[in-house]
Image 1: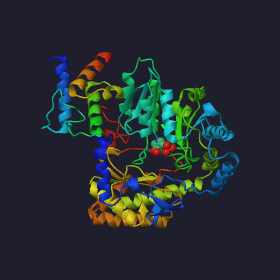
Image 2: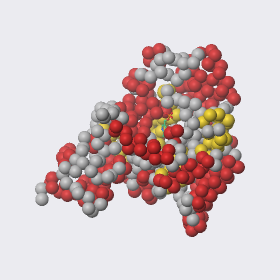
Image 3: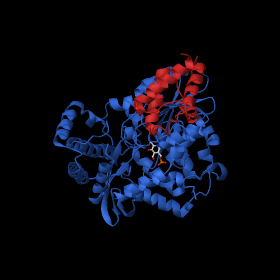
Image 4: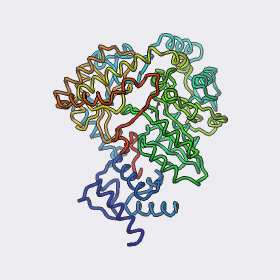
Length: 83
Length: 447
Ligand SMILES: Cc1ncc(COP(=O)(O)O)c(C=O)c1O
């Protein structure tokens, strides 16, 4: 498993914990539209990811994110910046 | 054909469903304002318990007279910003008085508290800087972040460890770091753990701004707020505040002891591009501000009143915010029951605020009330009785609930001493430490 796959897997694990085991979650899933999560749940999900990856995700980066693939990409970039 | 308003359909539906169940909070109309605590609502005499009128000074005779006098001598408005049209004496005097009141070097006046946060935060934190804001921040703080060119990082509500971790990750970066917190949070009445935040800001060389909107006149022996009450004023870099609550009029401000604050006037768009406060507003604000330090009796009355409501509702078995404060919120999870309770109170002649998700922490439905020094014990007793009656009818409280609440009360009731002269330890529930609500509802993907 390469780095990108690991990031995606981690994201999916956290998201399932909030959206339910049966939620259909893939790279094209739109985080705000497809999962029935409100802005509070999404914020908590972001806090989970920050702890898990040990990075801070600035709000303007989150604003650019639509899909899980976007999110995974943003996290990879932030990880590189932090390294 | 599609309409520009189509995107608001879900909001329209929420508004309509509220109206169908009784009234919508947006449609409340007062005809006659009888006193700081009473008005007529659809012809019915109603007790006001959701107006942030903490000291009950909106009808203060001296403040009213000062405003009238100023209207006659200076007119109804300034018709422009101070940068473009100049300042009136009153603006300068009020700034001097604010700086003196806080014992700080300088003060800048804004037209509202919303604009004070917008103008202060967006000006202070620029490109290459970092804003670290509490997740439960007021909308004015969230909007300030959108106006600012700084990077914005949120930390979990009232969670110093989460803030520390985020500052640690920024070590080695060159920009200034500005932490933004509130003294009393307006939905649940919980308070910032200021001492811990200050330890962290010192450790990482960050600046701290605190919005004392709900604590001015309310906390501290002289009414300067949470910073005064906790003895931490020397460690706070910036304070913002509003005249729209305890001061009973409208307007906002930024104060600081740091040299060079005045440059903010030249870079802050919400200061530069809006009309300055009207002279009559300035006149009544000055009059009321001059009373705040000496208003010890009003503060005592306010906290006694708050304790009567908080303890009364708690004993009845309602679930409330974690801390006794003049903001008393009943936490409810069932929307229909929350709406029914709010309507029932209105039918009984008691006005409170109904706050709905996502503007509330944890998706709670909040029946929020704010207490005033001007409330009488009878008004508060009535509110507790009516809440309890309706709460029982709706099955919101049961006998076992109230027993449990009493037992909890025995364990935790340091709350009563909160306004005492001794050191106050604000705290939050474990729930609010482990999760992260936002009232401003700043969503992921704003598009
Ligand atoms: C925490 C907080 N900050 C700022 C404001 C804005 O104050 P104003 O009503 O003066 O715009 C409010 C009130 O709405 C508030 O609750």
